[in-house]
Amino acid sequence: MNALIKSQSHGIAERASPSRPVAEPHFDFSGVSLTLGAKTIVEDIDFQIGKGEFVCIIGASGCGKTTALRLAAGLYQPSGGAVTFAGAPMLSPRQDIAIIFQDYGKALLPWRTAAGNVSLALEAAKVPKAQRGALIKDYLTKVGLPDHATKYPTEMSGGMQQRLQIARCLAQDPRALLMDEPFGALDAMTRQSLQDEVLSLAAATGATVLFVTHDLEEAIYLGDRVIGLLPHPGRIGIELKIDLPRPRDQLTTREDPEFLRLRRTLFDFIKASES
Ligand SMILES: Nc1ncnc2c1ncn2[C@@H]1O[C@H](COP(=O)(O)OP(=O)(O)OP(=O)(O)O)[C@@H](O)[C@H]1O
Image (cartoon, rainbow, N blue to C red; front, side, top):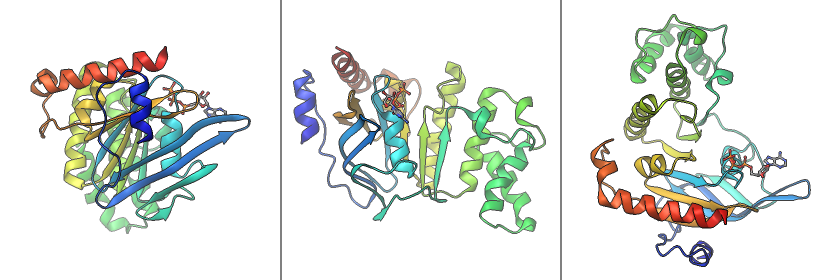
């Protein structure tokens, strides 16, 4: 309700499906605020993400997108309100919630091969050594890297390294994926192919996804819902349900009049939030 009032005050005609209740919530943000030092970073953030749902967060630079994701990950504790996952408070990061950052270069271990990097997640999960080889092959195949097992990250392109980071996260067998601008540093073609891979993987695994992006089209293309944050402090300003048919297609989905209408709505929201 809060979000409705705020979006209308910015002249956004369309709103927003009510964020509560969702069937079988995984992530649940209830009146979440975070103050660091003297600064309120996010305030009164209230939404749920259902099991298997794909939700994108957009907003102007510095509005608190990464902070919201870090709260979902248990990397920050709220100053007010609560964040839960499947009913349990997010007091610290969990093995069944994988995090994928934009900076794949830092996320991968340079002294391990692609296979060795994927193995890391299996070792952490105490998968017996004899079973790891087949699983590693399977995960590398899932992300389109079946022939690159023996390569080191520095021998791989940015897109391949990001694929490898995704393979490693899948090896965690996560119930949820938190993705922070994962394709921000990639060229347009690589970005589109990875968007499609993430959609296929999310559909195949049934994982819940919270995806942060600057790119409004990316958010609409991927999401079941898009949440827009207003800045200073970060708070929900708009929430849109994306009813575009799945599976999505880079050409037909993006040409759909509904896609264009949603893009205009989010564009107007961002413009208004910056003024
Ligand atoms: N540890 C911190 N201490 C103080 N302020 C912080 C801290 N981390 C983030 N901030 C501030 O909180 C605000 C939100 O930051 P955040 O990184 O979440 O925004 P964002 O929307 O992800 O930004 P961008 O799109 O530029 O990545 C910013 O003004 C940032 O300067």
